[in-house]
Image (cartoon, rainbow, N blue to C red; front, side):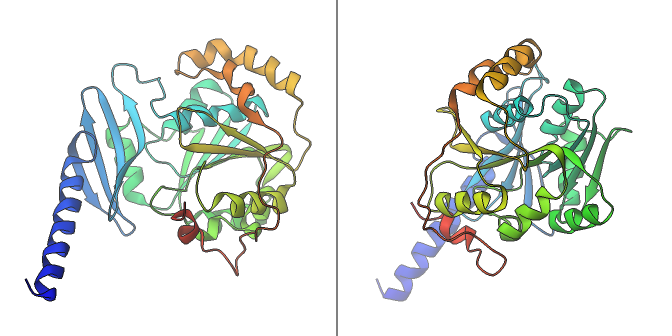
Length: 303
């Protein structure tokens, strides 16, 4: 076989494999597929579980999932882990969620914190429509969605002196990281949105070539932070604040207070403080990510 024909055969095989992955939705039957300006949005169904996925070149991963039999239960481990942010700020009055997905996080916050105001920023209007149609998410007087780039929203909110007790950054995917949202400058802009007791909780990655760079970036923007990981997840949650972080005994007491309410959502919050690392280690000579240097996607692909 000629080199050109071998190349063509390999390319055809790759395309076939990618198509098979997309058709299967990686996990479940595809019940909805809709292209947007940013990605192709999929909804899959497997039994009572419905998942939101973004179709990528080589992989399809679940972004959000719900269980129709138990709609309160948070299916994906990282969503449960992000509830650990309430151990640092247990009664936030104003919450900002960056990245809507299926709306699992703002829906849970709205139920657990009935007096809180919740703003959600989502760049893709197709994701908003899909969350409303398939995942039971809806806006209310307390829960508002802003279709915007997160950095643009952040700068405008700073200018309007809008402040939040909790900012949840859930915009980083396994296939793509918005690099302008992972820089020292952006983290500092986000810090400026916080109230005096405010906390940022970010869903990021446990093991990759990006970890040291990202850790140094958080440190330069906030100083010491908490790293939260669990064996059931490849994710890590970064918890950072411009204010002093509460001590271990305070966090443990809050976990006991939240335990019963969180159980309804499938969240074993009483176990969380055991894996809160207040002294995470990384190579401090690693370069932080900045607006001038932010190859986050390249670094993420390295082992």
